[in-house]
Image (cartoon, rainbow, N blue to C red; front, side, top):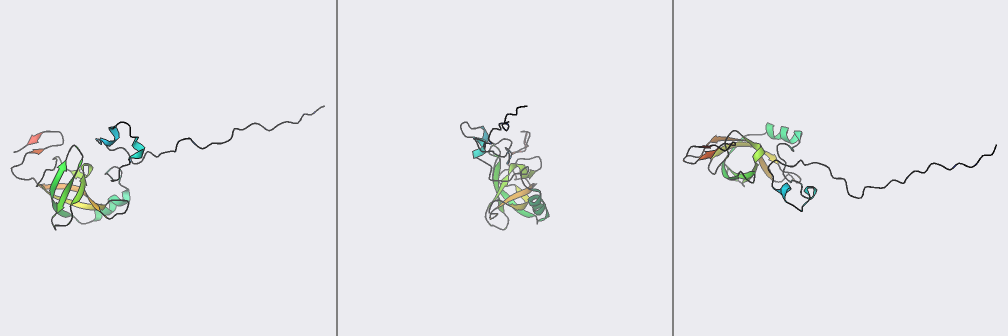
Length: 153
């Protein structure tokens, strides 16, 4: 009986992927035009602002437990999906994202609102308004519903 030396099975070496692996977070925001532009991969432009969908549970819980503030809508752009609120106490304007507006009307300049505040990561130095409720519509101003119907004038 002759025995020939057997060679170990050939196993291909492991290689790291040629392109980096990118997580799918943050999710693409609905209606965001940034993701539709050609030539710019979406992985290079993550959203710096937490929306209602991407905010962590703990940040949402802290904001919900916080005090309610009053202010006036300074500006809101439905097409861009954000705007600003001037606080009643006169401090710096506060950012508001479309996903944080409760109710059926699109805010316009002069609408009175109530809101809670949530810090904006990563440094948590600035705040954004969450749970925004329109309490008083601006008089003599046409308002639009989210479905597009114009109400009042």
